[in-house]
Every structure is written in C-alpha cells, then in structure tokens.
Length: 153
Image (cartoon, rainbow, N blue to C red; front, side, top):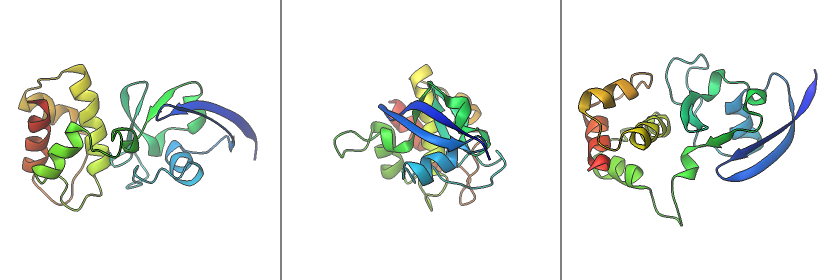
C-alpha cells in the first residue's frame, strides 16, 4: 500500500497527513479528522448524505479520493456554525422541521448552501434541482424545501 502526503484546507484550517492512496475523502474526514457530521450512507455516490463542498462546489465524499483534494478548500457541515451558533440555513432546517431523522441533513444542508451561495433567491424548481442528488428516506421533501426557502428569505 503506497502513501502520500496530503495537504488541503478543511473548514478553514490547513491540514497535512500521510494517507493511503486509496483513502476516500469521507474516511479521511471522519476517521482522521474526527469530523463525523459528514455521513456515510450508500458508499456509491447515490444518496448524497456525504455531500461536502470542495472549492465551493458540492461533491460526494464517498466517491472522492482524498488525494484528489490536494490544495483544495473542503467545507463540511461543521464549518457552517460560527461561535457555537447555527448558520441561517441550519436554523431554518431546525425551525421548519426539515431534519426529520437527521441522517441526510448534513448532505442536504451542504448542497443547499452551495445553491444559496450561487443564487440567494432560488425558485422551488431550482431548490429541487440542487437537492436532486440527495435522498431522504423519511419524507416527501416538503419540509426540506420549505427550510431552504426560509433561509433564502
């Protein structure tokens, strides 16, 4: 097994670790950095629970090799709260009951965060398109859509 030195910025902090070439980003975040907000769902890029932002774009950490993130800016759900206070989007998910069981929530929020950064006033159709790669097994998505709409107001 070959290893490499990985240098990247995670949640605003420069990180350097020796990692195996085949290490997935989700494993690096959870096991090496202890950032367990990124959930490991399907392990095949189908559910979106592991969505993080890489250089501002939503990506699936379960199918992204950590080594491909060399020099990148990676943001996880833990990056959104500031000073112990939830972000506007996190607060909206809490208030509008968009969390349901909570397993898909970090991925949903990170996908929605990327959308709101690009488009602060998205339509319902744009919200649905941005979240199309994120599956929720608890709901019909109504509360999730309402949460993103509330954060956009």
